[in-house]
Image 1 (cartoon, rainbow, N blue to C red):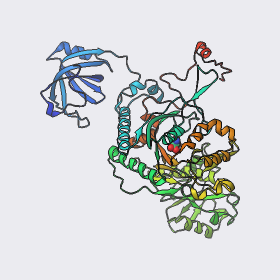
Image 2: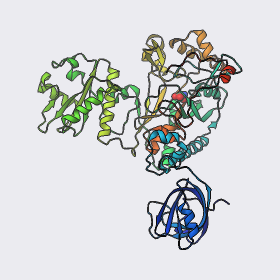
Image 3: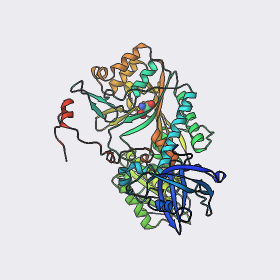
Image 4: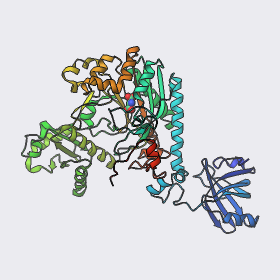
Length: 587
Ligand code: ASP
């Protein structure tokens, strides 16, 4: 037997027991005639003691242990003199009587402890060592517990876990596909699924009724923000349901996860917010509702009421009120202006107005406006003495709202209003069916082309498609989209019309989606579903800043696996077998 116990298991009540432990040497300390070793495994850390007076040879052997050596120790559990309240095993130590070195280790390139000296790159390169650190390992454990709870919940609701293929056909809608050349079909390619969307719909046609899968999805996007080229979805689909049924099933799942994994009982129904309202009040389809600071539109108050041409020319003027921030210094205000001017945000500037103790308003545009107008501004913003009003404007309302959204989030950070231990959930509903793509010069599906339009908006499909709303819904938590889905079209004629609006010719639609359209001719049930982002859920529960930290082997920001050094070139022989030729490689 390699071990009788793990390194996280023994307590004071075990004192006197003879045990065998195995694990990694986290560190050794020599104090007088004693050598202490912190022995680590997945379960915790246990202190080992080697006493020179009792067994000099053994102690000598212990003194030679290096960091991360793999050892096996036999000894007796004993009460510790100086107890460590921070460790569950901190009341005991093992008085060693035998030590076997099972393997040695090179000196690790960074300290494998909670607080490490290793930078991001080195820890990614040696991810297997980084994963030995409790702080990283705990995220992986949480991920495991989450998938177990997801399975438990969905199984109890009658869902079947069904695998769908990873090698499928390329679809033109949505993000760019990762493709895989087919050796047996020269010149042809598989695509890796961006999501099993059409397959899960076919499972509904097949009568599976309730499907789920914890599934890898692949999107070849430029890696802005917190994205990974491969990520995991909890993908679900249900038959004979409407939007309410899907929402209540998956709100139930969210509540289940919060209860089991965070010990948080969410009793109230999650609020619902139409997309248009989310954009109006927060400039985002995933508003962080942990704090207020909602937008106030100021066109009536500030456009053409003074000589400020920037506002007079604007298509949108909006403000937020930062409570108690009138005392911001010039430097702090300049920092905020710099913040909104950063290239990622791209605003031209920021106007501010301080509400003074006597109720008067002092602003950066004083010379253009009368005090009366500034008082109207104060009123519109419901600002009190001591508050700071921040105003942005632009000639593109949607763009300006998004910029103001960034400022609101920044203020939320500065004021400590985005507490990671507070959770604010909501459903954003009634998304527009389409959005205009400048790049493509046509309407694109905002969710995907299989999403059902709202029944009452179907007549608008022919006349004003841009006004059509969809039976689509996103679950948002703390400003993060944690899941989203829709009710699907199951009528082949309506689906045909959709493809037409999206600019597909009949032939092209048949070529790309014929398999689905044909299936729909054989009795497709009404159906709908949703996908949750597993990585995002885990990082939310673990309070992580990035999803990378809850993935065992993530890619870096350029989509590279630095540990495996992938992607990489392949041999000429492989290229020949695949009938591929590399045309040119840009440096
Ligand atoms: N397939 C969709 C997505 O990946 C989710 C859904 O509509 O169920 O966003």
